[in-house]
Image (cartoon, rainbow, N blue to C red):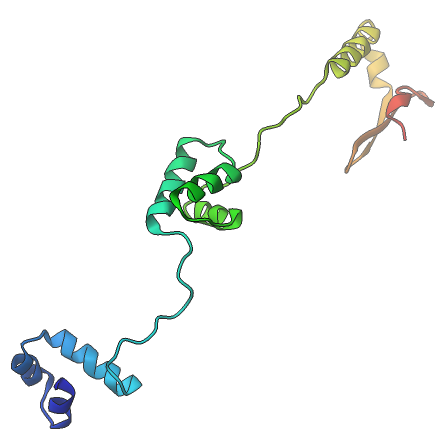
Length: 163
């Protein structure tokens, strides 16, 4: 009916008053008709999101509350709600709000007892050496792997480090 009035030459204001609908609605409908030749609701673009807003907010709350929670745990919590989503989807949702680094904690200590004993033995062995001894050392270092060898006056000082 609004379309017919527009075709008849009536302006936006007159159509708006005649049909008792807002002027902006009349403008939008006529614009749609001019562009697409129809006034029916067109199909939306793009794929609908897998995570609903409610579940996404719950995930973010959960991850912020417990920083060490794993993606697998978060995935299980979404499955309980009834939305099964991939770990990558959860990771993306967290990254969008600035939550990064869902990494499991280290399972093994950096220094084992054997390392500690070896370090202590090394320290005790060279504790009494004078300052001049340390000044005559030459350390060969590989930027990628660390010290290769420690040389003292032409002989290998620390053979276990040499390759």
